[in-house]
Length: 355
Image (cartoon, rainbow, N blue to C red; front, side, top):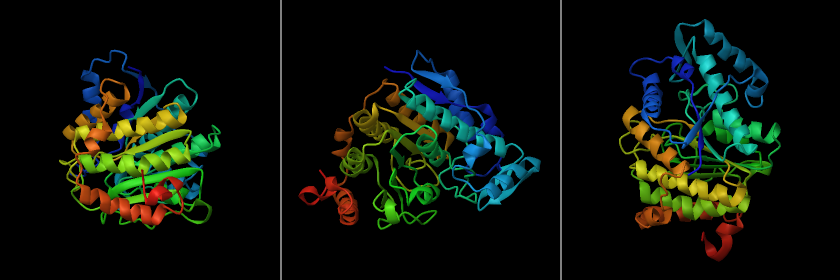
């Protein structure tokens, strides 16, 4: 077993939302309580979060938007974007979320750790350059990728987004950038109603955005198969130097905001697939960042399943899980994706389709 870096900070609980709001502090508090109750046994080490600096936020976000976010420190409570509340503690929580990602990326990039899981809030993948959206204030994973490229000198970064919602903000930040490959598997049509197959990137970034829009009801076997048959060959061809995961858990079968049927075992299998890619491409360098997941109990169990996989306590076989997937569902997505992307990726073009 190898130690996994865990980033947590209780100040992330100070981003307040209404009691009935899905993105409530209790979702993260439940995860922290479970971590406190676990026997570590060397399986993970704590990495301190820090507030990201203004110049780090400006790697992607607009200066006027950062000023708008900073002004929320004077609020009691309000909404800064559609469905996106903010309070006096929100800006610091958001900066800690970003800073936690940057510290995890640095620790993995310089070899102190191989894997890390950043357990923070608010989530980030809907946040755009100049606006909050979908519970997200700052785009944590996207800033991690920009930091890895511009500050640490990594040449290629892969971002995998398995949240049930499409990461529109992340896609838009990198849709013209061939050094960042964005792969998203998500429910469609569903909020934010972006992420169709034909959204492949723009100009020099064309082909480096890969979207798998799924109808309701996809589960463990289908996700495992799509990771093996689409994500893996493309990723191995791209050869990233770092793998980032926007790890949302709202595709769990018991989550109120999704319509998928993934279980804790499915998250373990996806994690193992990602680890296998990273081990073959970049010495295992993997950083996961918490996104959605709105039922505290199943979120906690799912997070622990991922940590168990990252730290080597478990070792799931994605191939066995993929074999249980429903063939018609898998082939439909494969055919649509290959039809769009075979001109960009040799691994999909060979023999008329994916390996």
